[in-house]
View 1 (tube, protein in one colour):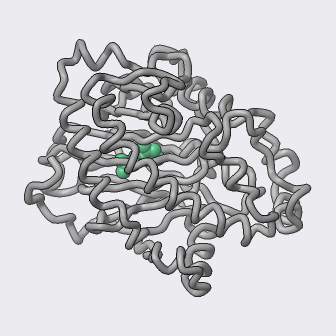
View 2 (cartoon, protein in one colour):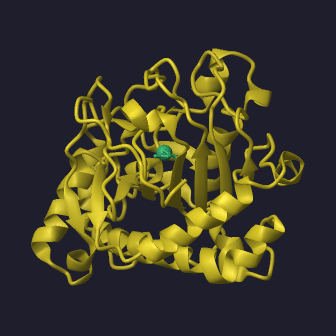
Length: 354
Ligand SMILES: O=C(O)CCC(=O)C(=O)O
Ligand SMILES: [Fe+2]
């Protein structure tokens, strides 16, 4: 559990040295820091973020996760996300595939919709177990607001750097319009000695939405940087969030912003003896937004798409359809064979990476 002394992240495993971006400097409009963020987003798609100001809210969310996951299975399963392609609610351990062979995942999730949190006590998508509902005003709402502040600040910078007119990406990720944006608490059981590719706990994927704000305590997250074939760990650093670009921004930007492939394996070394907890906020586009490159709105995007095969960024789907397809075909109940895994893929540069 978070809060107790944990074994150190080992120093003998391949680890990415991601740049650390200072959120306070971004907010202050510091051009050097904005350049560093942009460079990370168009090359790696991943960076650390310090001074995000959400540490207190993150801790409270982990405490809520501990209460939620301690509920009896019969209570949690009432809120299961199901097999229709909906993400919100509880995801039982083993509900989804982690690879084309249909190996089962090893994590439980609680996914809480941004829309339900902001409208609470009004219900937009679904209701939550009473321990969660009771904590929406005091715990979940503050976390969602901080996360939105962070991700909106980054979207504003990307709007400007992509040559889009002011407010473009913010309007496509509107606070008050329905979307698949959500907070996620993740727990995996201890898996000592299993920190290998044989046993991903979350399978290889690109994130489905636009921006991810992730808080890790133990290792286990591995990234395959754009164009690479070797997985590297991302070492958790206290107080530093891990941020990344997702599919939707890659598509909207015509491939300028990079959505890197990643997965989760059991924590390396002695950390594998502990439960693994993580917390995420995913900013995703408005449900009705068509996912296609914004070529009419930016010269840079129009130029970028020319370097890719024709139609690569014309998905023909709304954000809602894109997202629910990816969720649906990962569910083991919907699995008909390796083609189901293929149907769950997004913009991965190597869709076969396991
Ligand atoms: O738990 C983590 O470190 C990453 C989780 C993740 O990639 C996801 O939920 O999309
Ligand atoms: Fe992810």
